[in-house]
Length: 207
Image (cartoon, rainbow, N blue to C red; front, top):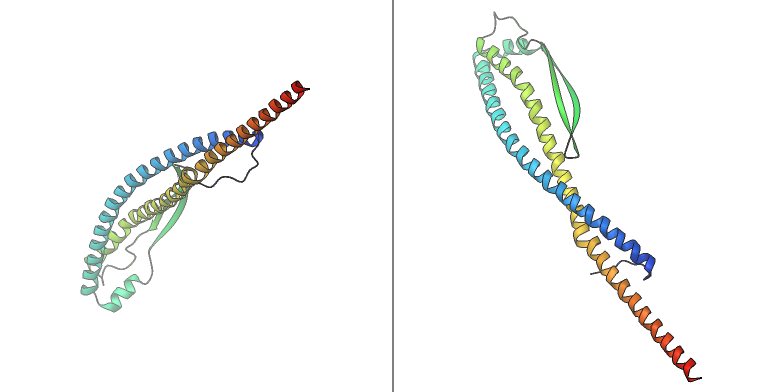
């Protein structure tokens, strides 16, 4: 294990011991954060998977209704009916903190009516299709927010994992190794100093 490049003296030894305490505490906090993030991520991922499957099933029914309407309506009439949109959607974005990860929350405000055409030249199947598309919009926006939250949490888990690994496998072992090295050097210096003192005492006594 590589040591840190420091001078082997008591001041550095004291500093490294303090740093080691801080590093171990930080490692524990980051490890706890990582475990909590992974648990929250897995729970959210399961819910979002179910949510996505439900939304995809609704979308399938929407497209089926629209394909039926297109098959039953003349192309020119269908184009004329859909030329001018009757509804507007405004998306608002707020943010909340989930395990130190700032995730978005999208709100949707729908105005107007999806059925913005005369009913004389269109069939009921088109009405059903457009109403279904209109009703699924909030669910699509909510799903987008949840999937964005999952992506952000995944990124944060990866960052935290790298920090935990850096502390666990690099910084803490290197600090421990350096503390042992400095301690050994200081002990050698003490023994050498003690040996010189003893020799000096012997020389003084001999005279």
